[in-house]
Image (cartoon, rainbow, N blue to C red; front, side, top):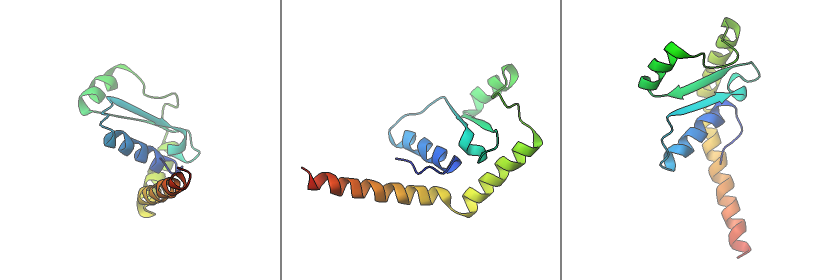
Length: 106
């Protein structure tokens, strides 16, 4: 379950992968992480990143100072406003209410 808050939602999704015992080699993110700015990201292990950095370009946007600054600001707001914690709280509440609804229809 994820609360749709751009990067906060992406990070919450990564947390879901961890709770399910899934350890991906590479996770890609785009669109919502720039809050409307064209921005993409790749999360991987240091070993894989080292090899990939020498071989390929990670996204179609190519990166630029304006979008990079926007991405940093998105991260700052997510941290400052505790958006990840909010997403976890809203998601937990929703799951709880859905379970109540399920029990009432068993």
